[in-house]
Length: 208
Image 1: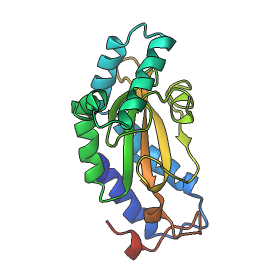
Image 2: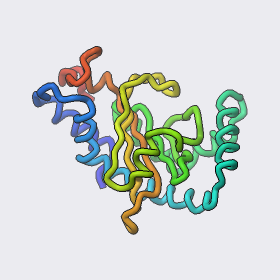
Image 3: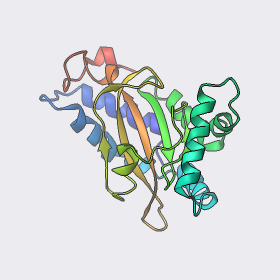
Image 4: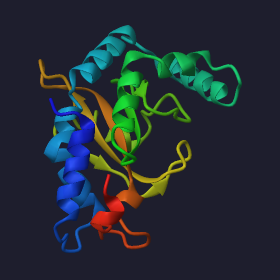
């Protein structure tokens, strides 16, 4: 299994050294997904953690989800963060944080969600715990294997980065079914010159 940093940095180097022909950022990120990120989304560490959380959350009610989301949001604004800190310290979050750090600034954040849309692992804190009302989960997990969602370019309120989010389903290799979703934030200043969406930056600017 190729590690995330190798996939991203190798792709970036090869794509930026060739003329892009006015290619949009969505097309570039779609190729990134098909050239390694879709496979990585089913890494054993991710699949194992999502399987376990799905089992632990079995039968989760909408009321319970809302209560957990409220608790998370209240902790974000509080000095005491037991729920947030427990999730940020779990094995999956440590794995995601390592992959982010090894990407040399290309990745702004990684979010892994279970089948209920709840955070299972994070490289960085999110403002909410439940992602089930957002396209990153709705247009990946609910649409099943082979789906993809690429967001518009935005400044993320959690990280402060100008980014686009690439989201994919987490697919269980044993069943072939979607069991969750993963979102990878990609730093746009690495891929594109300011104000020129669709045009990759020069190789010198983007070199890892």
